[in-house]
Amino acid sequence: MKFVGKHLIMFGEIKNTYGERLDYTFHEGERESKNIVLLGHGVTGNKDRPFIVALGEGLAAAGIPALRFSFSGNGGSEGNFTDSTISKEVDDLGTVLNVLASYTICYVGHSMGGAVGVLRASEDRRIQLLVSLAGMTHTKAFAQREFGDVTPDEGFMWDEPDCPLSQAYMDDLIQINTVVDCSPQITVPWLLVHGDEDDVVPIEDSHDILTKANEQAQLITLEGANHVFSDEHTPVMIEKVIAWIKMQLANLNP
Image (cartoon, rainbow, N blue to C red; front, top):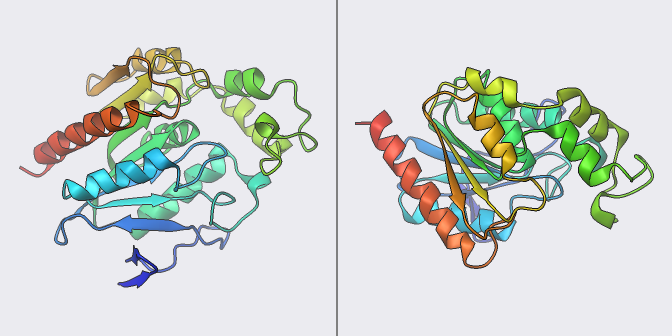
């Protein structure tokens, strides 16, 4: 265990199956805790999005260790952004789960990171609690809605020069199509949180996936909240998520 700057580095270097280092920040929480919350971001994002940082800090203040990380090709992680796809990020998440094998794990995924969580949790029982924040569900529809007028390998996501749109990314979104059919395979407690003013991933995505989910899934709608839970909606989201995680961990560890 060591510090780099003000950040605690507890798990050493984490590399995915391609040998790419994944950048992460660990929030300690209670020192003896065997619980941990993983925080995954959405497309064009990284572990340092303000609401993700705030959630990590809030969890640690509540005594729950948290680790926020950037998928390969994003933020400070190694790899090419143009190689970043949902399928590759599912693999990245598996790498992090390998490192945390001795912990009770809750995964919290935002937007595309929510789709990553659904796909991973549907087949990997190491995720014992799942939270989807404005989770992407219909991946093909998202690709067509947001980037249908952009030429892959030439244009950019939302006109951001640092975020080139790759054919690999579009092909992966279209091939997956939707993660709705994975939801019946998720047998662990699952919280969905979505704002009704989300103009990136519509709240209907969460309603659609909830219809096929098991009874342990529930949806919290935040009135007026956008895709990234801005402004006054950040502390509300954090409060709801932490309260749910604490309750579920108490049930898992009576």
